Image (cartoon, rainbow, N blue to C red; front, side, top):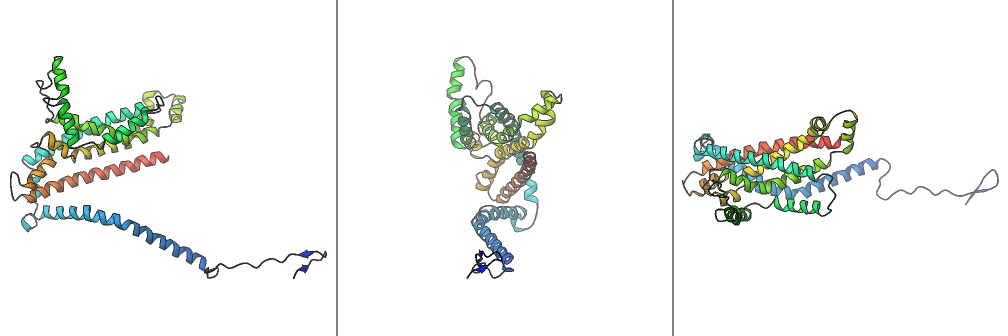
Length: 318
């Protein structure tokens, strides 16, 4: 039925509000939302279960086992294995690995940063930037035996480039150059360190805004002062983080070092010798101690990288 208004017009009947099925009344809204949020949280944890299981089995469990074996040499608690791992010839291995990693991180960081700055804002030719990105993605992962063989075939004792240079009067071997030395291995490592640094620092370089330089110029700052007071501090966390990443990458490299210098004094090679027992037997605890020091060193580097990345992200949000 319809109701008549005072003016004699018909007023349409308003439909009654429809209650949703299962709503449970007005007070049930927050409860339903809270339950739904809890269900989503449980689903999120269930998605993480395979990842957490993978990390636990292949990272945390082996790491804990290595740490326990390094501090319990012979089945009893003691620090003798850890002390031996940083003394005598093993100290030389750490010094050589630290030197090689520092040199390649510094040179790779500088060259990778220079390459990123050169490519900043470059639009011509159009194929250059995609080609460089593709090459960097491949070269940064091209380590190990294939890379070492490529350099041996190119600049080894009987390499193609070595023979070509000898033909024009440049005796590369006679000058003392060898791929098994620190300089030779650093040259090989730079092949994957430079593109890795380019990939890491390119987003930060591309994030430099042209308005910052324009504002600095309007305020009377020259290029040197702009890079010293504006662009330099902005890029510093990303550059330092990239160099730390290069340092960790070089320190943990094994296959390339093994092919170029299988008997070299480097930490990864010493770990292999001790654990395989090729030279001395019954020294597994010493190998675990070398791994423990390596884990501690790389873990400290990763913490510094994360701190620098948080600092770089703060600049990006500004």
